[in-house]
Image 1: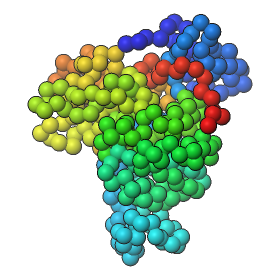
Image 2 (image 1 turned 30 degrees about the vertical axis):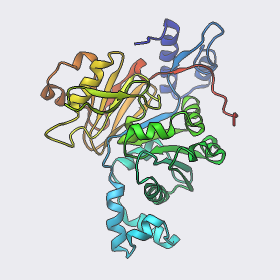
Image 3 (image 1 turned 45 degrees about the vertical axis):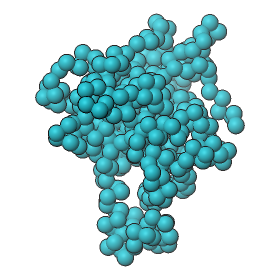
Image 4 (image 1 turned 30 degrees about the horizontal axis):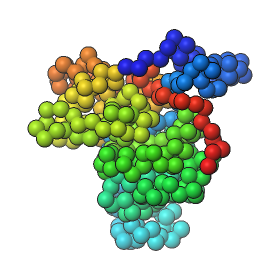
Length: 348
């Protein structure tokens, strides 16, 4: 693992302590004088590893709202076609919002990322149904009270100046990544102007969040640390490169979807191939909120942390050691990302 130097570790520790004290005036002054934390690399450094100031929310898939929305809509006389085409009247939107019980992981997510009255940007380009998913996400986040919802369903849209401006706008509180295939999502979004703007805000803005479910969570891993799947005989994990919001954390989702081939062994194989990383395995309807080097569990099931020394442990042993809702998983330096320079928030 590319370990941070002594000064980096000191800076991370001081920053974590400050943020947990609530940001006193003296603490803000301390942060401002800590090299590489707020002011960027010192003159002799070409890059540093930094704890981002934004929030990262990862979910293991099968989130509740999409399943409940159609049932409640049908009871109100709203057809699937009306939902998919978003041809609802304001009264229908209000009625549907009242009927839907978003009491699961999305409710937990909103405790860490206010949506009401804000702009949400949704990236749906992980799926062949990108346009349809974009319409559903517009409905979903408007039901949560978002003032505006902007969707990115192709790489071309991720390069549009208007979309990039929305991500940079302080009124945008969240960029949300939908499910599908993470390798497709990486191909369609990584390296775009929208991706760069999102990364810049995530590094410096504590009011900003990035969230993803299923493929949208797995894609947050870094260079060579994103799981794409099993090889043909299920003996090792095929690895690719994700968006790099977690350079040294490998994320896998739907951990117990299949009893015959659960994904925990796949995550073990992935960590075994990248001993500079730790793994986070997210069960369905479950996730983590990553902030200041810690991952807090949200949702109804469990999350597993796999370190290199866990790669030889049995499935049964690891299953017993999962983390439940409200528990904190320390990620430490693994939550840092490499930064070449202080991001320029005004850049077009």
